[in-house]
Image (cartoon, rainbow, N blue to C red):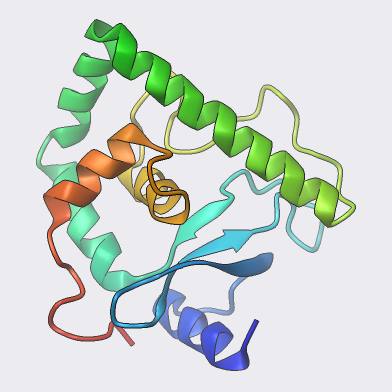
Length: 162
């Protein structure tokens, strides 16, 4: 990973990144907007969030979506739509498999099977930031992440976040 990416991520987060493995997605402005993190931080602490959204513009826009009640609507649809629930379960399974592979590649013990994946998956819609990060890193991988992205519009349009 290039030092310029690490520096940009640190500026986006306001702190040095922890457990950084790779840039998982870049914003159209060219900066990283999603990073892949290790399933365990350097001190061994479990870190279940494999894909972490770093772009402050995107996180702010998603916060507005979360405040709009979109997650409640998604949660209700999850309970009523078996096809959507199956897609969300598949997103969870994909996320856990990718996280386990990342642990294996780093010689780390995988996280316990009963540990959450991210964003409330597979039974809840809890954090759109995490679901969007998954969708950006793995296009087509997260149905609610895709819906949230579609609602966001072009958050990057007025220039780089850092």
